[in-house]
Length: 231
Image (cartoon, rainbow, N blue to C red; front, side, top):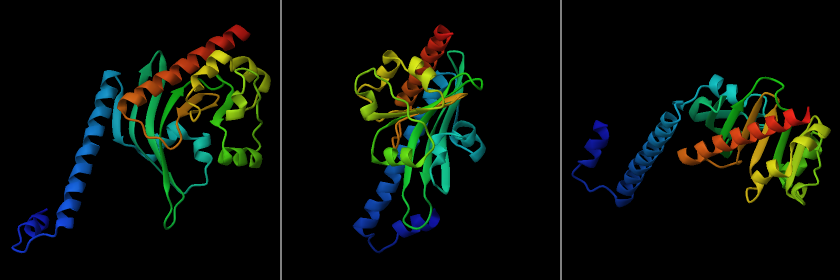
């Protein structure tokens, strides 16, 4: 820091581009700190714990075994973790960063909400936006695609995969799937004991993250009710 101050106090004028660059760094730091503080406040209002830096173990406790981690990536990091109990369910949310590694590689970031459940509570399934990448991924995988008739045209825009097609047809009611109206890029997946919900490549602020958690809880609650009705 003293070296920087000495540089700024030097008799020779500092080039304008250097001053602008330093001001940009300060502005980014202040902006980041404000986001961190909003994240902490949002977690406190829910009675959750909040951590700005997330260890690999904490990250994998949320994401391990998910479709997110099936990507061919070398580097995975996470930050801004909030976790606690809401509606009688254990929940967590974090921002997940992936990169393919290597020179010039780019990363993808998304905020993910996770609802934890006893193993086997839900069927294994995933609902993803239908696009070129997801379509190729489906062709190259062993995933079984599930078709639903209602709402009309839903499977034209989304890919549903799962391990129990008959059960999923009963559980994925038009009312349940209505959450995807005007939110076609929303992804939801379950490994049977955990439900993840996220928009790929989208980092959410504190307010939107809380809303995403609430959305996940409502999905789980509705699906559990439908499962009871099916018995």
